[in-house]
Length: 71
Image 1: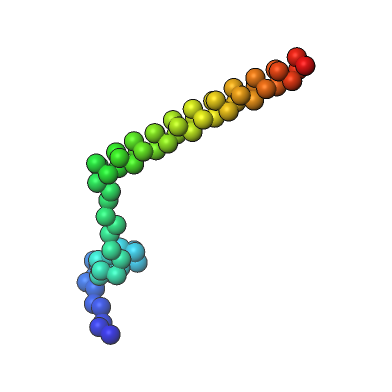
Image 2: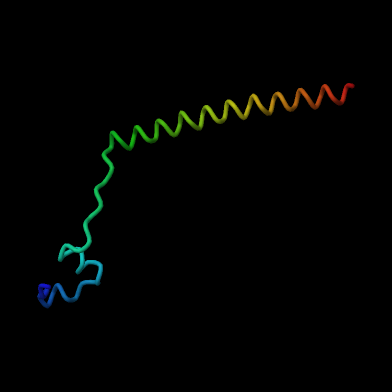
């Protein structure tokens, strides 16, 4: 196991920053803008479909309840 030697200024950093400096913690790669916009678009499409299905189900339930009240 290698001994890690830090300079005086590096030793003043927080433990997390020291680990990043030494290379123990890798910086996360950010999602590219194009991929991020695709995820947003897919999410909006799924939410829209769910909203439409919910609307039609609620309309069906309301009509059924009205029909039951009339009878």
